[in-house]
Image (cartoon, rainbow, N blue to C red; front, side, top):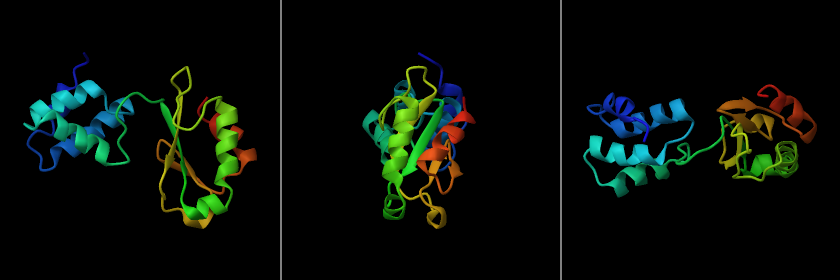
Amino acid sequence: MADYLNILQKYKDVPGGIIEAYHALQREYNYIPEDAIAQAAEVFKMPKAKAYGVATFYSYFKVGKRGRYVVRICESAPCHVAGAAEVVKALEQQLGIKMGETTADGKFTLEFTECVGQCQATPVITINSKPYHDVSPDKVAGILAEYQ
């Protein structure tokens, strides 16, 4: 088991510290490891179920492994109308995976997300929170190439 304790301990006495600790874990690993949740329950003196509930309540947090680069596409109405479904098909084809999956090399994960607040330039994808606006299927290969 990896030692997540160093990260968790930094936030032990901070109000709302478990959320800050989960942010720190996610920055470090790009997800929240399952083992870290059990350690968080001990550090923050709460039942494991509550620590897990905090980790899964917020859509930003991801429990369990995912790729180094998380490609999220907005599934709100404006992006949908602007052609998000075609962008999804291009992403899946380019990466050889379906939404919710991770490439075999652990490099990319595809996820849906709610509105990212960029409705002026739809459809929008983010890669590790960096937004890409006015995405069309023909732009997908070039965007992903930045991360190869």
